[in-house]
Image 1 (cartoon, rainbow, N blue to C red):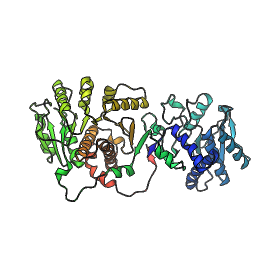
Image 2 (cartoon, helix red, strand yellow):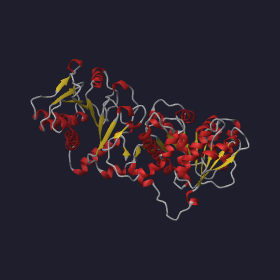
Image 3 (cartoon, rainbow, N blue to C red):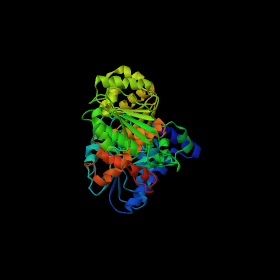
Image 4 (cartoon, one colour):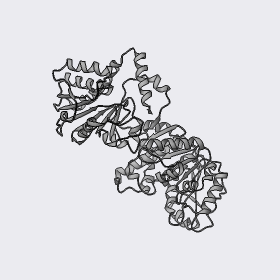
Length: 511
């Protein structure tokens, strides 16, 4: 699913009206009727008071359409207009007039805190104050209104976007955002729904197709693409019945140091579990027995050094390499990494301490192979691309770094984002239980295993992140979030493949 900018969505509205020979008011009526249908199916005529808070722009117009349709169906509706300026959109004015035509209980024009209503916990609040056109944070008594709404225990439904939240800009005032229980967004979700700073304001969302011009939307380069099961299903490569292990590649895992050998174990196991035909783990000499006993399916090569890696030599041509997990920042290890980057010919995943070595020795950045996959955690990312001021600045810095060095960056976290130049791919799988030691090592193994099987580096990144998160979701259903360990993710990778093609009823997306 594509994620569009506000500008693209406004243009889509205009193109839709022209091509379908309808007015903006007609399109607003369509959008409002879809929201009414959604709410009516759930309320089934219940006489619970519905409080609709409208702004004086098009989002407020959507709220007035919904209010009128609810009144016409016999619901108990109370509508409030945040009358903070004399400027009103034409669509708002049209629907304000239509609203007054169907009821004697006209909307209450609020001018300050004295007009804020009392709302019972069993009531419903509809937030239609501001839409995606908001370009500055709400202030004064309007901000106080949002604070008032947020203190209510009633169910809160936002239309298109929680008021006060921008679709694709940093938040200036986090207190001036409606904290909704659910958001019904038009046509496609917004970028802000998936970022660490703004995502918490969109607990659940559903995208409602309001019939915007499909040809126009298809022609647009999106801000980002959302990766869910339908997309992941298309990534999967069906295996040939007559294939052998040589068809699925040989991956080299360069990982581990004294006290950090678990990183090598986890990455090696994940590489095997995700389907690589063969895996060789390269570890310090002290890790030999550990790897042979914990991952008997893998081969093991050891460095001459007992405690850390000083020389990355191999006597075969790997189809993929993953390097960095738990290797430490020793100067000799950094030198070995430099030698590897100079000679590597196959796709490569660079993680953890390898990234720290690169950040520490800036000349190594120029040796990054084209299409290398970098998988930093937040601290490693900051050392690599520089500190950021907000989530959007972080994304911009990653895009610039990716474009400059022609690499892929995976921004790990909730809704992990894969960055390749200006392209963003937002993942929809995963859960808080995956915030545990070793989870990143498992991801690096997943990526190297897919690369070894011949997946393109970008496809391996996006698909690997999806499967990693899906396995985490499956594991959490058995052990819960708190008890999850990285090895649980590995053990669920097989189920993640099976889940790809399991039919299930679509549900709202939880953040």
